[in-house]
Structure formats: C-alpha cells, structure tokens
Image (cartoon, rainbow, N blue to C red; front, top):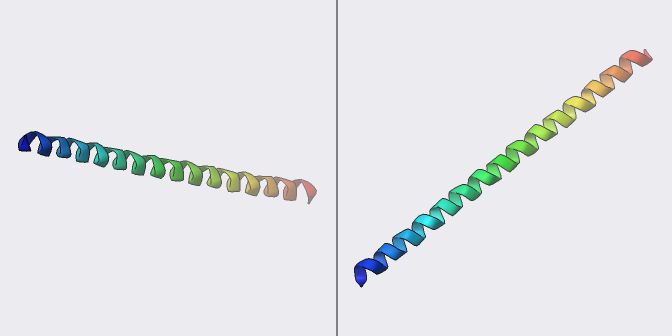
Amino acid sequence: MKGSALLAILIVAAFLLAAALLATLFILLVLLVGLAGLIALLTGILVLVLVCHLTLS
C-alpha cells in the first residue's frame, strides 16, 4: 500500500513538472512571437517614414 501511494505521488509530481515546463515554453514562445511582431511593426513604420521622406523631398 505504501509503495503504490509513493508511486502515485511520483507520477502526479512528474505530470505537474511536465505541465509547468510546457507552460513555461508556451509563455516563452508567445513572448518571442510578440517581440518578433513588434520588431516587424517598427521596421515597417521606419520603412514607411523613409519612403514618405524620400518621395516628398
């Protein structure tokens, strides 16, 4: 009885650890995608400003 309870606790702990790792990876992925989107947006704005500046001058 004692051994099976310990095994169950270990399995639950392993599942929780895996879930925490997956959540961390997912959050990092979301942050990375958000950062890439922000960089792309800023680059687009910069290009737009440069094109407008060159065409108006």
